[in-house]
Image (tube, rainbow, N blue to C red):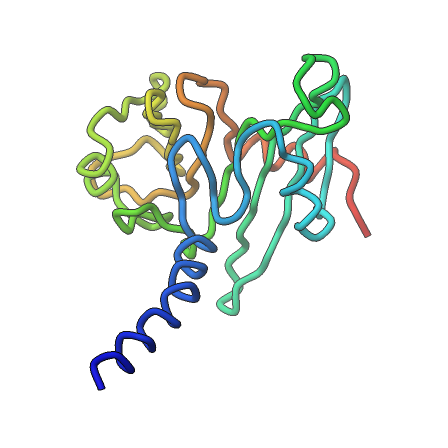
Amino acid sequence: MAVFIFSLILAALPAAFAQINANSIVPGKNVGKVHLGRYGAAYLSKLPRPDANDSGMGRYRSVWVSKRPDGHIDTLYIYSVANGPRQIEPLEGVSIELIRVTSPWYRTRGGLSTGSTLAQILRGFPDLRPTDDSKTLYDDAKDGIAFEFAEPATADSLVTAIIIHQPGKVDLATAQDVNKVLRSGDIQQ
């Protein structure tokens, strides 16, 4: 009987791990099944067509928009660059440099997501620092994760977006960047 129960647990493990991977945020690495790095074309090919694109000079900004049942709008923003001009293999591919997500479905290992407070975020990421005087964007550059707030953050302010980037990089995308792509980018029909 114990062997049968153990077999059931083992059979369920891959499904459980797939669910964790599907909505996991790993600082400096990935959001869900989309990973940072030079193999971006493989990840992007598995996504539906973006709702808007803005590209030029080997740089690509793509936005996907989804509407929740409660009417709230979520966005996924991916910034990628062509590998060829940078001599990165595969030369015909792209490198994903940054992923920004607003959906609370995606969570860090500690359970943090959009809707978490600044106080909760600081407990999970004690090296987090504001990026400028506006205090609407906080970054842990060492780990490669940033959090955006709608207005200057206080301890009770709610995160509106989570941004994953290469550790050490600090060129982050904000709600204004996403809106710019949606306003002026190539809207996909």
